[in-house]
Image (tube, rainbow, N blue to C red):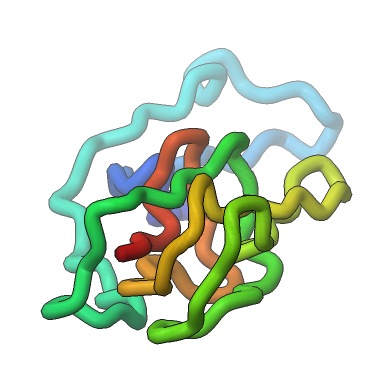
Length: 124
């Protein structure tokens, strides 16, 4: 048997998997591994300007992975300027400023997995 710790959407599970006989068929007792929820570890704080969080939200339009951060805190952006680039299904998807403003916070880091609608940054 092998023990694994797996994180799915922020929930941490301990999974025990029995090894098969080596013929590709799983033994009947190991057909359905059991996942036991475990307390999720504290997430590392993403780089952001906590005191300067703005009122205009920049949110992910699709689930994916943060590929690149195009804007910096304090930078002025125009409506339509790319703030963050998300990679989803081998495509780079720019997430743009919904209106003119100044970047108040960047709430993600390169490599972070994000869900659709996740807060990526804020503007003032």
